[in-house]
Length: 86
Image 1 (cartoon, helix red, strand yellow):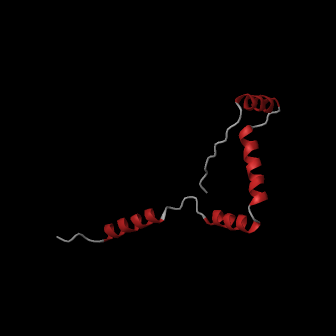
Image 2 (cartoon, one colour):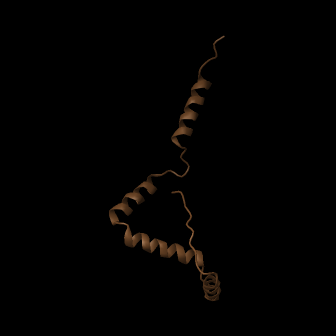
Image 3 (cartoon, helix red, strand yellow):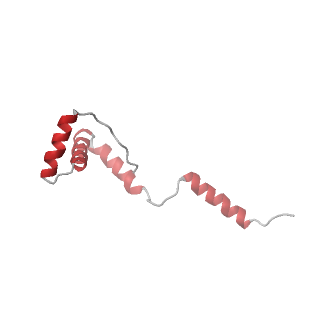
């Protein structure tokens, strides 16, 4: 599944403070935010929708070409098989 980014704003002094104290506890801000976002997803997105999305993710082949690329490959293979007419 394609990853997307979000941007949030926070008071700079508070952000520096949270980073400083998280470092002391060997906590990663990005990972903590991702975990919190996952909890929000689980809290607000209905289970049936999450299941539908998960099924779509499992059905994707990581190395699969897009339909457009598959069509182009098929066209090229056909051109190679056809003898040239002179």
